[in-house]
Length: 133
Image 1: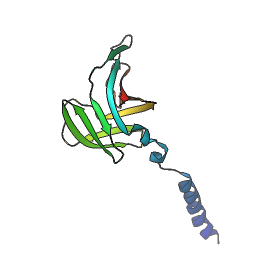
Image 2: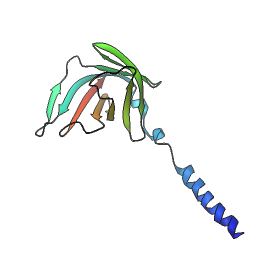
Image 3: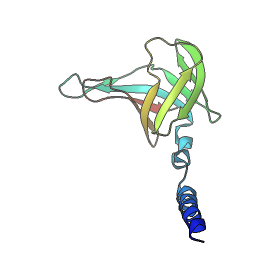
Image 4: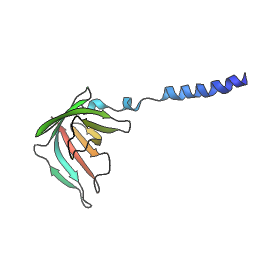
């Protein structure tokens, strides 16, 4: 009987711990980023104070609920998007868009979408603000 318990107890513990876990994507509200977002502000620092620049006629991301997006700036580019398990918003373009960052940490605050490069890119703070259209 003790050999049976040595097998069953670890299996039971594994089953309990596994069933209590939830998929991280279930905890991320991806619905909040669905919509059309226009770039309106660029914020960065080159080692000093934050510099805030308003952007007129900035690019637009149209993020659809089916996992596709359209990026509009002078031309239209399409692709797919996902929120990874480490909360990174990742855009995969169908064609290479040179010089374009495609992985961001993000925050939605009402009608504002803040995108920060997910990887070290800036000397200090930097992000782009998009407003829902």
